[in-house]
Length: 324
Image 1: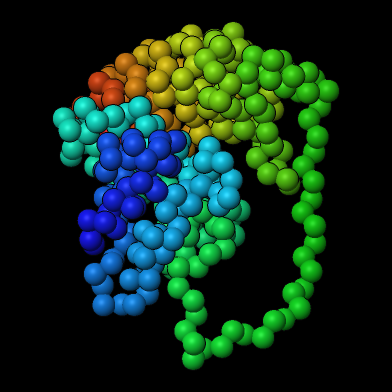
Image 2: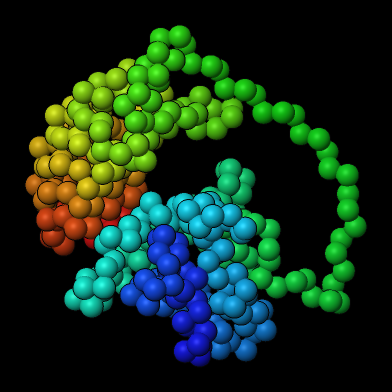
């Protein structure tokens, strides 16, 4: 790949993290890792070349953003990446001091997002879209057109599918709790149109929520995802989280939790995803997670966790993927 192409891609892809062209030169690891992972500009396959050209020259930042919209608006792929790649963790000084660690973290984020569905359960994963030389953000633009000697199939009249069943509405009691959660900066949404499981998110509401706020959340029915990134919750707050038995995804990044807090989580049998990067957790904290048989993903960047601690956890949970 030419240096000109690399620079063009760096400018576009760096915007994933909300940076402008000036900052792009300080963030070459993102474009470089994406190129190494997915692009094959030197391949003899014309489709590989077309895909590289599409992303580097034409699509640029729209790999992760919505075309024609403000750059703060990310598409589905960009939103998933932004959960794992915080621009504050990749400033120039750290990129220079820890290049291998930076590369490993970015590659792990790409891998994690590639495994996620691009839409509902019937949709391909982001990785499958990329493998098909399509844009992972799902804007409908294919990397390469169908071969000229292979005509498009004639349109058929689809069989209408029954409308999905509506999820049941929250009870008046739950509605009252939802209103209280929103007052303290949280959002509460149903997981899907036909699924009344709840997703509770405090990440975008600032850091005002504390342990008392979680006492409200635990009374909500069927909370399956809880995002507490960057909030003021402590170990005491996790005692409330321990009572949310339906929880399968929990974000605790950059909070004040410690090993003592993780002890509260050992009864969350449905937990599949846990992110504790940027916390004071050590190997002793990981020991409390050994009984979480459904845990599949654990993120421990910028913690005191060691390779030895991870190895010991994997003895109890051989299927878990730990990103350090």
